[in-house]
Length: 152
Ligand code: ZN
Image (cartoon, rainbow, N blue to C red; front, side, top):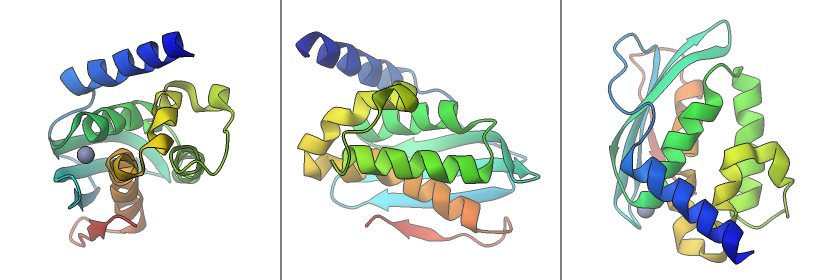
């Protein structure tokens, strides 16, 4: 198990140092901002959604290693998924980090690296901030409406 943890740690640190899909997305048609006051993590997620499918997704912001790496991995996983599929992944991820389920780690792919977060309740919001923000963005229908997000 400790080897596995080291591996998970590696993935988190790598995505924190080199976040994927980081930066502005000019043609975005969905957008939301999120803030985690407990840690100070800030994020803006922008998406291009066409026919209920996430064609592109990028994020900006500043936060701790957990929030940044979670957003980075999330964008990799959600790109190309339908809105419904994205919400299903979020539910599975949320259950995993809140310890509600052992989770079938295989179905989570790289997101399984956040399994250890459930042991640190204060970090759960860091890991889920980007997901809450993305969900808010997906629930908004037009670019002009921007919903501030507060985590549960
Ligand atoms: Zn944080």
